[in-house]
Length: 124
Image 1 (cartoon, helix red, strand yellow):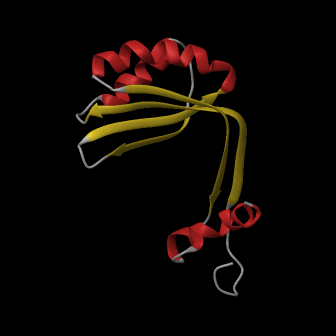
Image 2 (cartoon, rainbow, N blue to C red):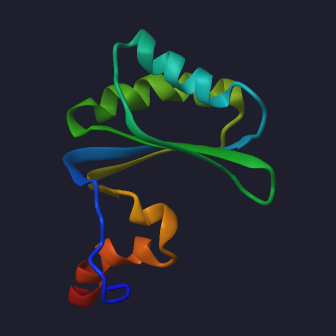
């Protein structure tokens, strides 16, 4: 634990049965995330936990989770978009779980973000 004080957590959210999707290595430019989620919306598919990152080569990577039962439909919706964006890969990692911990201490206490992971690291 970080320090001897109690940690103020607003809550812990967890989701199971997810598939981590990615549209990877598209040359970064405005509109990439919009194009990805427009394609999902047209197919009435939802996503959660969205992350966009840009690497040192100026390639953009968009990753997000969907329900495992929607994984194949999402792949089908993403392939033409990825081709239009010039992405090098569409990825899918099945059987993913998501844990989110939030609260005021995460903003104000350095190192606090490691705390929720320590029980899993000790078991590994």
